[in-house]
Length: 158
Image (tube, rainbow, N blue to C red; front, side, top):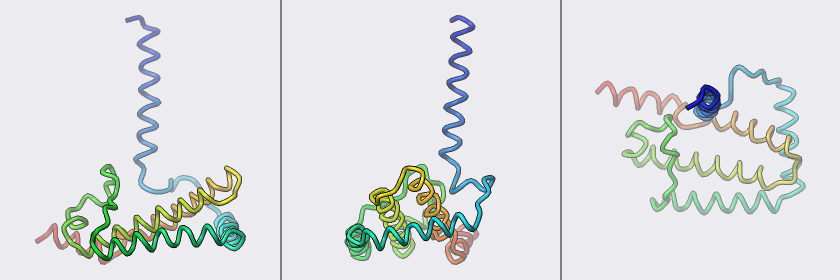
């Protein structure tokens, strides 16, 4: 193997590591500054789109409602990505209440992002909208709620 080939492989591996690291960061990057005005403008844009395209809101709302009914009935197969470390505690899978709360969170998150993907926006606007939704959903995830943390801590200590 030549030095040039080794350098090329090394550079390719550095890029792969960087990409993997970026994919494994949980939630939005706290290093990037976010202005409140930008968040408000993006939220306003989403409200306007909901008013302009109510059929999409209805369609995604009905899809969420159907999944929520399956969740409540215990027949939903919705599960977090196996790589998602936020929900690795067995409580999320062994306790029916926690499992259903997780599934409702995942269903709502999926439908909100699917709705943003479906609405008529420019590419940059869609990226901003997905980012704002990520801020909202990351903050509201069940693993961040005090009751969930206390339950998981208590279970680990007992």
